[in-house]
Image (cartoon, rainbow, N blue to C red; front, side, top):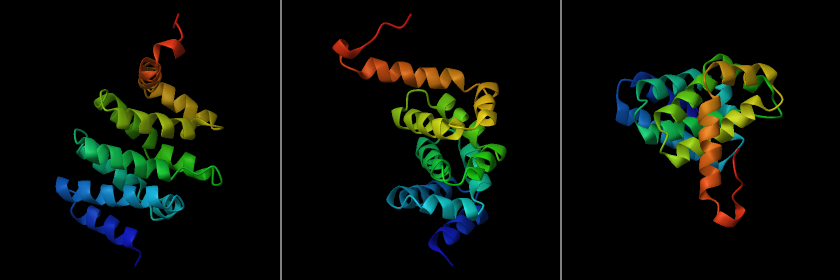
Length: 160
């Protein structure tokens, strides 16, 4: 059995324990960061629903939310466009938007959500509409304004 499958099974069996879910999502995110192709293995293992469920259950835990965002984002592949559709259908867009809304001051969660929402909508009109209908425009604008505010004064543009 692959290590990620063992982690997913543990997370599923002990979903009522926040510490277990935090550790599991952290391990999965670490593997996804270290090996980009790992995300496709997560996708094939059907982990989308499990990650989304943990993100909903422990929505106020920033460590779990960030790891969950990384895990979801790692499943989105340009080479396999069906991943965008499936992750969206299983609630991935809603989970990313909720994470951004629930943690507006957490720059890491904001940037992660922004990046992966962008990947989800790129070349996928249905997902772009879903981002709008799920209330994702305001969090996206929030990140864009925050990025602009972090630039040196000489590089800022006036928003009209």
